[in-house]
Length: 243
Image 1 (tube, rainbow, N blue to C red):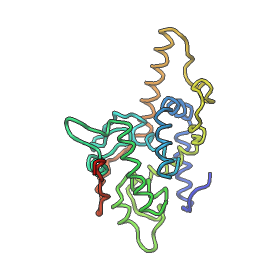
Image 2: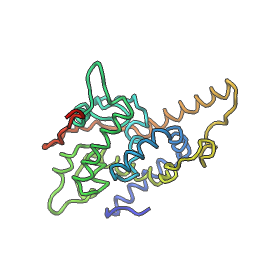
Image 3: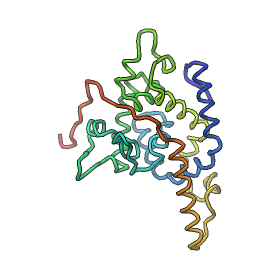
Image 4: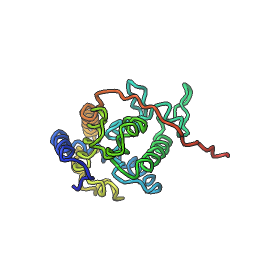
């Protein structure tokens, strides 16, 4: 894999994360295959915005593709949007209705935010990822005239690990293969799932496997600290569809 223009230490840290994830490669692939419909939807939205297709893996780091996930910091949904960020990009976050738990609506908002970050940081994927994790203000404040690249910046350890883990995951998953529109049964990794049989036992086996995979991967990708993400001005105005 070709890395961006980053330090040798960056590459070594990615390799360390890769070694940590590799024993779970088949489990990761199985889990992604189960999310294929959500992944296809995310691909379409990424392509509309001309964003890197690699970003389809971001929900794995954020929520393990769990649309009902809630963090101690009140981030919620597939993309783990904070309330302020969700509202900033047009989502309703109230006791009666929280669009962050809607896969389609939250994906639109998250990708609008990622589009903003990707442009703000001059299409630098690492800075975009760091800003999504720690907030664009924190990344901007860490930059200076002679320190622009991700590996040159003083950022929280959680954010640094987040970016390294993303690149390690990219090495384990064929993003192009995930985008193929082929029948479920003919997918090259479909054989990793529990055999399909028309029996109650087979159904229970499949459910047990999925539950175990989800639990292990949620622990594997869990964030260790809570980052306070405060947006900086100017905010992108949210235009009502009726405007």
